[in-house]
Figure 1: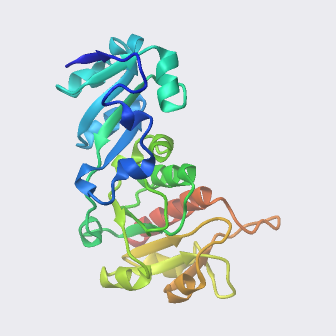
Figure 2 (figure 1 turned 180 degrees about the vertical axis):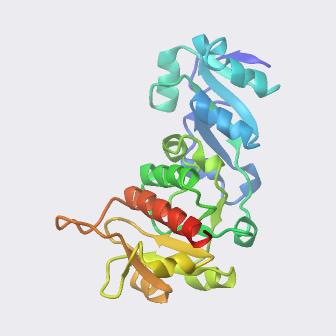
Figure 3 (figure 1 turned 135 degrees about the vertical axis):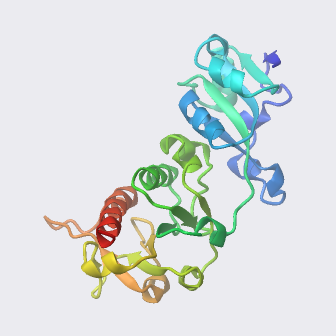
Amino acid sequence: MPIIEISSLDHPGVEVYGTLTEAQLRNRLEPDKGIFIAESPKVIHVALDAGYEPLSLLCERRHITGDAAGIIERCGDIPVYTGDRELLAALTGYTLTRGVLCAMRRPLPRPANEICHGASRVVVIDGVTDTTNIGAIFRSAAALGIDAVLLTPTACDPLNRRAVRVSMGSVFLVPWTWIDEPVTPHLHELGFKTAAMALSDDSISLDDPILKHEPRLALIMGTEGDGLAHHVISEADFTVRIPMKHGVDSLNVAAAAAVAFWELRKTLNNSHS
């Protein structure tokens, strides 16, 4: 594996770590050439375990025989760029707290019917653009048994560097893809009933027994501020709220997702008991 010492921000090959924007990395015009950046040894190992293809590594010198050694051993004959810590921070725009970045091939989008085959509980992320929330939702989805994640075109890219980091690599563990709007007709075609998380006069509690008997349920979640669009709520089979006290009317979407995933996981298990 070539260890390449860089002394300039213009060194060929390192532009993926600095000068290219997330949109350029994603490369929507040529999806087969898309790239994403995984950060920290643990997250990179999760991606490699899930079969993602590494293209290059960027790490501090001291990590070549330290935290990055196991990754370098696994990655085969790809370039490993290294240099002074200050130079790498200037290139990436931040100090490499974990010392290692990996550029990886972005997988081609999978059809929704493929990732939802055999699924009983899925979540639709509609219009959530905060990378921290996306990462946290994926982490909860992986931990609490959600079978697949579907995102509308207005949602944040799960392979955004910060979203990947916040998820601790969970974006590599849960099948996900994009779904066109309006979402409910598509989900009905896939055999799901839909439950929109929203406050409305006809909303039912998350622990309502009616949800226990739905063999295939898609939970639709929107932004904390604006929430879901009226047509999304009206088209859903159920409108669902989380019971709360002390006059609190809503939770951050990532927190609400964790609560909902846990309750749906329990109700699903109970419905089969």
